Amino acid sequence: MVDSDIEQNLENVAQAAADVAAAAAATTPQKKQVGRTLEFILDVALQVTVEVGRARMTIQDLLQLGQGSVVELEKLAGEPLDIYINGKAVARGEAVIVNEKFGVRLTDIISPEDRIEGLERR
Image 1: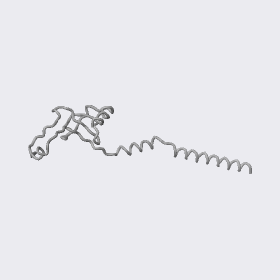
Image 2: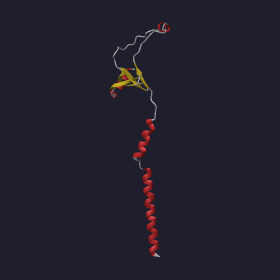
Image 3: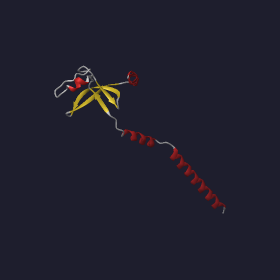
């Protein structure tokens, strides 16, 4: 009878240890869970805008525009294009053609310090 009581107690201890290990595994963050978080935000769509240049004009000049009109931009030919992500300047680049479509090759990534400085100027 004593042997069966010991066996039963050992089984109870083993089961309790397994329960504790399972509970610890459930509450411990694992790399796989972090990966799921990163995968979740990788699907977030961002708006990418490439700005060739800007111009200011009066309403009178705007109303006179027609087909074939030329709007003179502030940028010079050959200057880098500005690249914005969700309205924030992040890079500069040059226009390229890839498979008969326009693209932009990044030539300069704007440093975080310069991004903050640009926000202060606005």
